[in-house]
Length: 93
Image 1 (cartoon, rainbow, N blue to C red):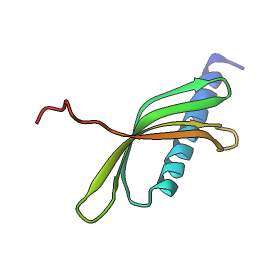
Image 2 (image 1 turned 135 degrees about the vertical axis):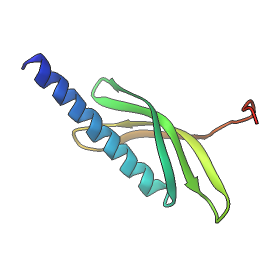
Image 3 (image 1 turned 30 degrees about the horizontal axis):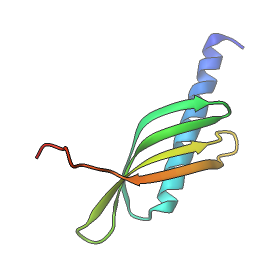
Image 4 (image 1 turned 90 degrees about the horizontal axis):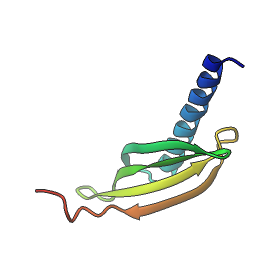
């Protein structure tokens, strides 16, 4: 396998992992507005994705949560998913 084909393979796996993660989050939250992936890296045979998701809770009210997701790119199976409220206390207004 050449260096270029190896890089293409890794990029293809990464994009499959990102697509699987987005689909999983959209199934979890029905009114998703935005999914932001902060970091994506490979750890053993899974891809780990850190990011934030914004979704509507009610007509005027939205929510923002941070997440960490591990996904197997070959099967599309989510190995683990953690979600936490985003703290914005120190944000400049």
